[in-house]
Length: 315
Image (cartoon, rainbow, N blue to C red; front, side, top):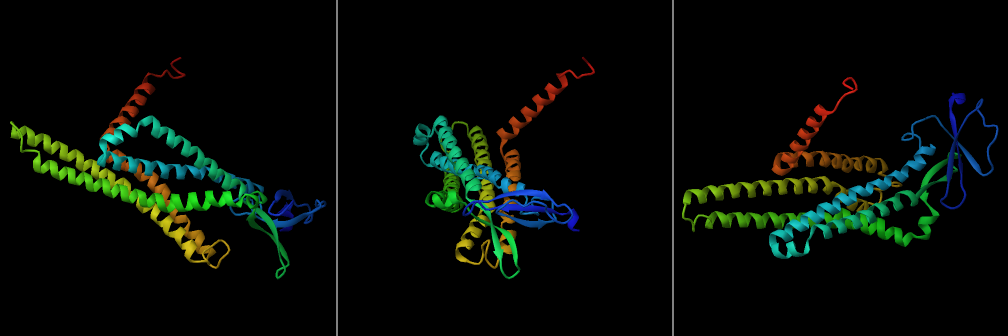
């Protein structure tokens, strides 16, 4: 039904630049079409199904918030490295790895990562008009902006080297290595204490009791470290494999033969990120006694506050 459809007018100002507006149809035709515009028909009102919608052109800038995932990866790597240094070099770690300095590093890196991701999401890609002579139709296709083409070197450093190579490959292997070394060192220390803990003691029963308590604490810490590290490795390993596959298989791209397969494969890392965020809370609650105690205290305080808060009926 032509009368019920909408038309999407696209203008091309320069190479890679485009502006889209949506106009309702009137009797199957438009009475006025601005000069330099191309009319493309679409029957969908949903931005995620309609690539010509004005909303879908602008919503891509929200992708800059994906920088928070990179910040999370960086914080996870910092924590893993800090744990490893505290186990192997406890005195130097206590001297140099202060809370204020670590917070400053995380804050600065977080601002840079968010800013870089917003720059890429909002200023790298746009839509441009493409004419297909075989079907005699004009369509919209994703293209690079003129701003990106003028600053391609800087964009490639941020997008390819920093976000792709460093944060999807290097950080993952750093977390694997540091977590493995930390667990090995903690197990060695636990075994040494078990062997030499009851040698020098005036009260063997008390010493054995204290040694068993220390052992349980170390075992719980080791299990929590293994669980959180293993969860992070499992959740981000498919994304690393997919990124490497993009380099090895040329047709696995947005314009290649396996475009549909690529769209499905990218859903796997997206789902795993949500699963990781949920399971981390479960791990901390069941394995972290301090986290569990703090959470219960917060909930109990909130419950007491709600009981003592006067309602409208009591006023």
